[in-house]
Length: 337
Length: 277
Image (cartoon, rainbow over all chains, first blue to last red; front, side, top):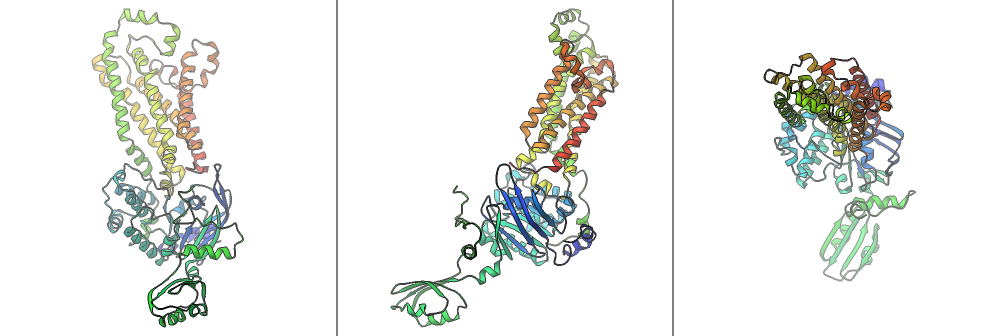
């Protein structure tokens, strides 16, 4: 970790180039961070590093500790134990310097209802010393947001849009987003994802939480999974994909020989009838396609399984933590308690 | 998304932004209080000529039980200063502005915590101290502005109803009233800043305001209250009528207490986990 003094001295220059801290130094570093609430819940021994220019996905079901971790980063709550640094600085002692470089979107977003969208964005811009109205107007136009509408009259999706815009305005070096696309319609979600990718492309850093891996995998480079307050896995999205198998469904017009598949290397979990076969296939697809071309196909589907399943199955393998919950994600545990 | 001049973004956030916002979001409320209290004062003044120098009425008042007279600061209603004291400055006026201040003070941080708007506010590059400090300053200005109606209306009405009150003494009692209100508003803030709970803050501040009023007003009659009377900020600020006796340095005790409570609020709010329910 770079000394605080050096980091502060270099801040002015670093900011202009969007290269925070010393080269290679993590933008966010948590070491054994523990935070408990009197009412229960919290996080235990969380250790994480997020690097410059990275889009880091933070994945877990509701109540797993995502929001706790994020609120620690912006100094709304303080850790019981462990070390926390952002840009090599202490989020508490150097809070103002740190937060000047962060755009934050809370998970439980509540805006000042009596202001208009424009007044609210301008109010926060004033608190930050920028940006000015022209940039705010350009952003609002890009996201089709009417700045003159009072917040109270906005739909949930449009409120979320306002929250998203206040986070990204002023091009902060680090975006900390707690479930940023909740409530956005798919088109705007797509726009938001594009913007996040552009942010990362310009060397800035994004830390976003979600309970949908399907969302995180679209934008993130790496993913951490948190469960019951503990980080159970950190993995690159590319690594997860490379480890993934394909699910193959074949239907034929002529009777098929199951041996044709079972002798192919990489085939597993084969289930076959006279006119159909269903199996998993690992490795390059070429030998499979060659084999398939000899058949009279009625229907064929080759698809990737959900990363969620891959993620979980991978960590089942070398699992030294508690038994994994199958309830993560879309069909998840949210409403089922 | 084009980055503007990065140097512009480096500039510190503009001071006073939170202060101005806090005042502007309360402007309708403040206008309402000002108008309401102004009407109350005007109505009181309109009645004054009918009892001005009315001996029969003075006699009637003298026949009231002592406890009643102490509690409601019934004095010589037939003179201007006595009338203003009895009708406005002994109870009704201070109680209403104390109410305004403690509602405001309890809401200052805890309101944003309970409404969950505090996250977005404090994630900005502003210190908690600055946020609380500026919001407190807005409350001080707002409460003082509302209290000023107690000087403005009598001064405006004086040529018609002939109160015979000096401007300096009137301003003195208005300042004392405003400072009393601010003390209890700041007490509510201190409880709210330490706990994040608006209801608790209101309860504590209101209970202490009522208790200190009763100690101040009943100590003349109840001998065992007399030793504790100096502990009542109400007594120190307005218990010894500034309208007839003029400005008292004892008001500085109230100012000092308020300053201590502001410091306590800043310190406890700085340390707390926010909006954790």
